[in-house]
Length: 197
Image 1 (cartoon, rainbow, N blue to C red):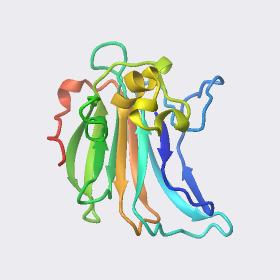
Image 2: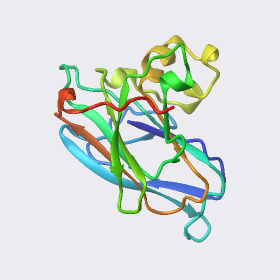
Image 3: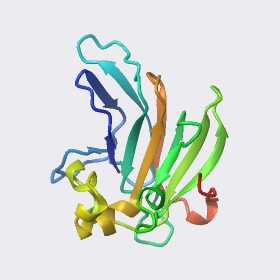
Image 4: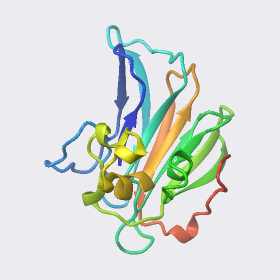
């Protein structure tokens, strides 16, 4: 899975912990990468800190966090990638491709409402429904963050349907957690959520 945040502030450092599995030595690009071996789960937190002194940094404006490349194994419904996230914007927690690029793109990601965490934040699970392999992974932010009609056919066909945009409100600092799973779970055991409007 590839990660990117559209939060441009030179004094910030975004740290993602818990990278497991062997990353390919041929990986290129400027998108962050989480790589797990088969049937593993990785919980991680992203932390915003001041690069000068390491102190927590409070984000003073809303921002978006993008996750790419949600797919399943080539055998139907197996090796399903998923991520669980809490603490999103309560009004518009996330956007899928069919919201962002409507009516041109149909998302292959499904969302499940998981209830609330111990802090009262609404939680979601997002999971893949489309088979894929390393050959369709995005590599550069400059390939994706363009007007739709300036993107290459490769990006439109292979990247946009497996894109997830997480929306966060101002005031976020420490403790935002994600749980990324790559498992043999069958899609039949996951119940999709109705689209968030």
